[in-house]
View: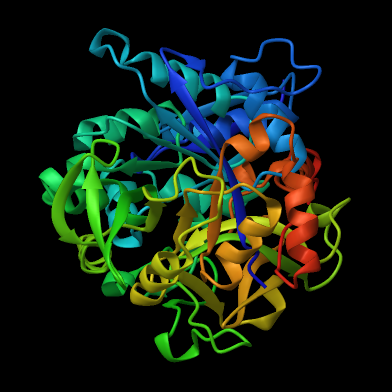
Length: 212
Length: 252
């Protein structure tokens, strides 16, 4: 039986992520876990996250999960979601905290000066709601998902990769920002596939079938 | 571009949807799961549940409702009604809610907004504001279904809850609620322009055109409605088609 581990480091509820994956992966064992051994033994790993990145980094280390995350990100299909994407990078402006450094680049906040819509209206932060995700190119994770499809976002910070080659999608909100990244066995998104109706379920289903 | 959101709102009492929902082909018109699924299929961007359970004995039933819906409907869920403490917020989030809306408790104890957003993040905390016009260009915050005037200025209160850590405001005009004559656009625009967090307009929707006005003239980020969708009068999809025809960005 294929196993999927959803890494739980005590930051918020992972029930929705687990239920959405169970929905698209009948017959798979989906485990929400804070046990490094379970993460290591799983075929696929989901790394979610919500709240503030400094708290997430602290809790991850308190539970002794850093090595398990680094190992999984280096070896098996790995899906980062929201703060779970941001934590893969070097550094975040949120609390000026260091990330895991798996991908080069920083996490930055939407700039007040850039938060203007085409009609002059002020754009709200957090960026909350359904926005278009423009794919940088083909990727097995985008299979069956139209370019420009809308996904559900809720965030105030986003990733700025140092290496353009890892950008898997962009989204416009005041500026264009990176809304998905991919490198080898890693795929990570700023939006919430578990809350993005059919498009989100399709992405999760692609992850279950992905063989990088 | 970010889409403007359409949010159907369901009143739930002791685990059942009340005030009636009248879709054709609905097996059980009181079942929150079945109704939520229907709205998801129609393209609702989120769903809001308002728990109006009167008996304190039945208060925990909403948790089971949220669990059941969240297991089968994969769009954001907001739950409000009777939320008083950070523990109430946490239990709803653990059951599967994405956002929790706080109303009277925020007025009685504004610190609960700061405590809750500090614990679970601003993105999970909605402050519901019920406002009534008291003079031209002036609105005050009311509680208890519009019976209690708190004396708070609605715009100042909106700015205060933003500063306390609210991630979103659900703004209801008590003058318009139930009237079907449209949103109070002056109120909606005044609050939306005064804060940097998203504002959901509520109260008074009777036609699809009213939804579009809430976004265009009212500058709301999202619009919430109940009866217009519940009785099969219009689908969420029809609402979005009308909004798109008015030049509003929607998810279709």
